[in-house]
Amino acid sequence: MQTDEASLIERSQRADLDAFNALVVAYQGQVYSVCLRMLGSPQPAEDATQEAFIAAFRAVSRFRRGSLRAWLFRIAANVCYDELRRRRSRPQVPLEASAGDERPAAEPASSDEPLEERAVRQELARCLEGGLASLPADQRLAVILRDVQGLAYEEVAEATGASLGTVKSRISRGRAALRDFLLAHGELLPSRFRHSSEG
Image 1 (cartoon, rainbow, N blue to C red):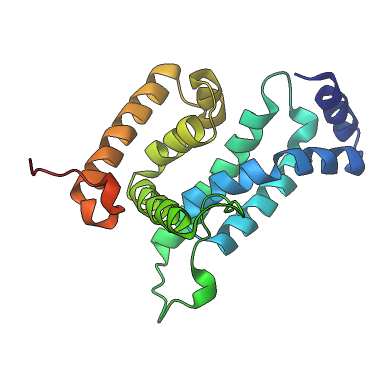
Image 2 (cartoon, rainbow, N blue to C red):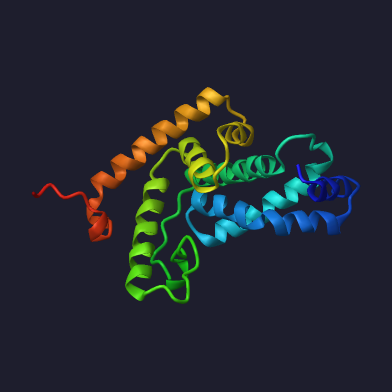
């Protein structure tokens, strides 16, 4: 753990709100990214991110050595699981999607990126997000943490509270299901990513 981060954690554990806010600034983008991919739309992801950091502040005095990032992801994952359970118990079907409900592209476009390239990248991102959304929540979380956030397998295990073997199995099954989704929904992919059976 970096000295600066260790110092911020120690100060946060003494109820120093400024120190905790510095940790929020450092990790809010990553936590939001996980929540967005788990929940599928910006507003619930923003709410989950805020709820996760409130829970983290209340629990930071109990944080002991380890990866702060993995600890925060675990709290965020629990918030997302709670939200997904609530949705299952009272499913809602929107009458119509408003323009503001569309998910943003995974990353901001570069100002010098050609328009066609940006469209292709956004189309591919939407297809991949659809594939992620089709996975069971435990596989989705493991794949997001490993392949999107770049956590080591051990950190994914810490973040999910699962054994290393379970994590590897979830990632393997999630990747296989994602590949099957992309093959089955090839028409959703930009043309250059479609598998062609022709000569």
